[in-house]
Amino acid sequence: MKLKQLEGLLGDLQQFSNPKVDLEQYPTGPHIASRMLFTAENSYGDITDKVVADFGCGCGTLSAAAALLDAACVIGFDIDPQSLETATLNAEELEVEIDFVQCDITKLELKGRVVDTVVMNPPFGTRKKGADMEFLSAALKVSSRAVYSLHKTSTREHIKRAALRDFNAKSAEVICELRYDLPKLYKFHKRKEVDIAVDLWRFEPKQN
Image (cartoon, rainbow, N blue to C red; front, side):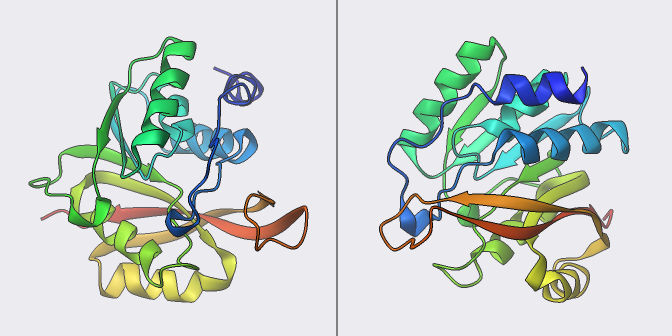
């Protein structure tokens, strides 16, 4: 599947109808989602025929992209039942098979490296300090091949240090810098949208 075709399909997906500020719910736009998953497959071979987990899947945009790129199995995890309802409708609309699980990522009890690849757009940690690190730690415990994750560029050194020193990553590499258009979703937002620099990271876990 070509990048433009993937972005077009993701652009038709439903997004949060009533986003929850405490969960830092922001939609992962089709531009970023398509490039994230397309790069994971075409540069590294980490999606097609692989078991892919989407942590904090929200409305399922990254999950859908993985399924459209022919992942062997896609599992989306999220704590919010309303988001999972929307994600399920999106999967049905695209006619792709995705399993959705309602759970708290920080309390996930998967034994060992049960998925090949984790993809995620975690909370940036602006409402709950350290939320992004909790997601990264959990992802590196269950992935056997790679973790792809979006983090604010301003946290780059902190992310790299934590991944390599604290979370047992073998490697931590920024594979591209993207612009995240944050729409005005909440009352405390002053501007119509904010453009945030984000890094797309690829982490490799150490093999036990």
